[in-house]
Amino acid sequence: MCQIVSGELTAAVVVQDDQMVAFLDHRPVFKGHVLIAPVRHVDTMLELPNELMVPLLSTAQRVAGAVGRALGAEGTFMAVNNVVSQSVPHLHLHVVPRTKGDKLRGFFWPRTSYGPGEIEAYATLIKDALD
Image 1 (spheres, rainbow, N blue to C red):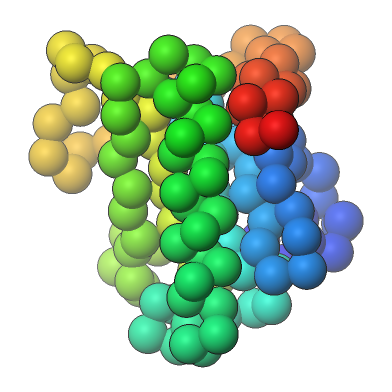
Image 2: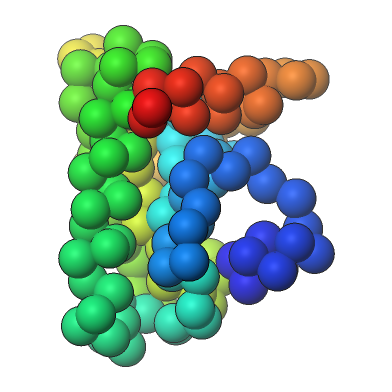
């Protein structure tokens, strides 16, 4: 996450400001799966400073609405892992598009992948729905 914030790694960014960055997960549960992270390094939700709570959840709310509008999702699943199942040591909130009958069950998260150019197309759809 820190490498994405610093620009060392590229990502399909849908939102970025001085406090939060939101980008598409490169191994999504469903296409359009967005990760939201504080720009400042924070390991887990337990260390998140109070002044970043509202920006994190406000960004999640905006992104969830955009995902629904852009992709026709009927809802979203939002989750934060703390240490266990946290793939990188930087706090991030998952916003996963959901539709009835999508077969996501419990906490088993099957992963998919994007085809050539697809991740950028999804990012554009979501960005456009934010405006």
